[in-house]
Length: 440
Image (cartoon, rainbow, N blue to C red; front, side, top):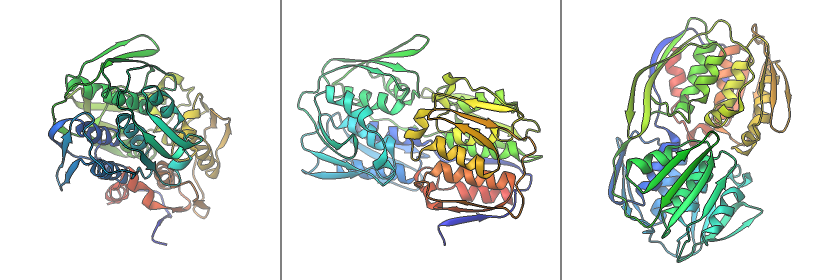
């Protein structure tokens, strides 16, 4: 019974300033790249979630010294292809697709076979998308239809490759970029636009990387076999985590919220653009640049009337982790909202397109879904009867399904029982604490 949350009433209006934990994508990337540097790298505000802790544990198994302290994390990098480990080791990625896919890129030069495993949810996800390009470097893989567990055996001489990333997957792109570090020569990546955190870190570290762009693709050229100096990094707050509190504020009458020091990388702010299209007033303050990333305070307030939208598909990649909460806002918009080309949502921790539809249906909102699209018939007067019981369970412990359900319960009413609250440990351990602070 301790692993569930019961919510019986909507939240009262609030006016608050909050801080969100460090960005998960950047926390994992910093750790993996720091392991390839020479010497001690230090990060501050590292997200101490299960996904990040699994990353640090995997690096430790690969011979990298890690000191995790209260206010910082230190990684003593061994250089490119410097891992030192025993034969037949097993690396547990837990629930983290980012970790499991990216670390494979660092192992294309591994001396011995290494087994990658994950939890039940991660073991259902597709890894062929990274196995196929990484095989071109010369690494060998054994798996069951491209699913975990995966055994990788590297090659002594990884070869640079040409790779066309067609899915708009930053994980696939980054796995290839990390593998390219191990090669003698130039790897060329043509990539559908996606998150560019790895490119920004590479550029900040003065790594030999050249990036050119056209309307639809990024062309990335990387020269490998170089030494990388250690670096310090203060992780900005995670906009994916902030999105839940942005939505709660929008849906709660007479409320105002400031979220401090949030990463507003242009490849991550699809949710801000989509919400502005829906009529939400969002103001960015204290905008600054930090080692290539843009950071700002996000100010948002409740919105009386939300507009329905036909969401442009070119915003999908920049909002891919936020669509569940976007769907929740569309449920209260006036008119029919339409989102398409979202098959990638079903490649996440759970089939999120299906779960997004299911949550809205439980609210009494009509939806029409296909394998890659959803129509949402919004209801501006959406309120749930106080006596209506809503149960959320068996969702593969997807942290975003849990958090979306909590926001729905606090915004629309009803009697909610939401199972597996420990799912938030993968990305946002302080989520419920911040919720409780907003209630005070």
